Length: 228
Image (cartoon, rainbow, N blue to C red; front, side):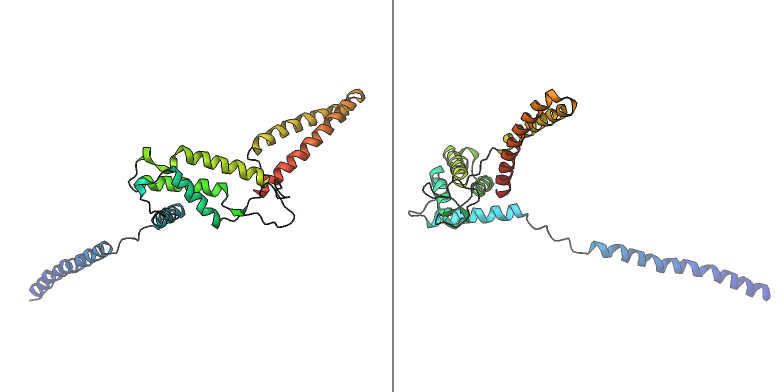
C-alpha cells in the first residue's frame, strides 16, 4: 500500500512542470507583439532653407498673379525677374546713399539721411538661388529657367558694385589683407636687423614706418569688414 501510494505520488509530480511551461509561452508571445503595434515616428519637419524657399516661391507666384497684365510662369523671362527684384526694394532695410548725399561712400555715416532703403545685394543673390532651385523642382526646365538668365546675373553684379560704392564697402577685402600680412612680415625682419647692427638700424626704422602705414590701412579694411 505504501509503495503503490508512493508510486502514485511519483507519477503525479512530473505532470506539473509541463503545465507551467505551457502557461509561460503565451506570455512571451504577447510581449513580442506589443512593439509591432506602436505608431511610426512623425516625419521630420522641413529645414529652414526649404521653408524659406517655399515662401519665396509662393511670393513670386502671387506677384505674377497681381502683375498687370497677369503673367503665367511659362511666359516669365529674365526681365520679369528683374522687375520682381526692383519691386522688393520697397521692403528693404539697407540704406543705399545716392550720389548727391554727403555720406555717399561712407561706411559708418555719423547721422541719418533721407536716402532710400533697398534690398541688400546678398539678400537678392540668395533669393535668386532659392527661386532658381524651386523653379526646377516644380517642373521647370533648366534651359528655360528665367532666374538663371544672363540679364539677371548682370543686374545682380550692377547692384553689388553700386551698393559697394554707395556704402563705401569694397568686396575685395581678402586680397588686401593678405598683402598687408606680407608687408608686416617684412617689417618684422627689418626690426630684427635693428638689434644686430647700428648701420642697419636706420633701414630697419624706415621699414617699420612703412609697415605702420600698411597696418593702419589694414585696420580700416577690418572695420569695413566688421560693418558688413
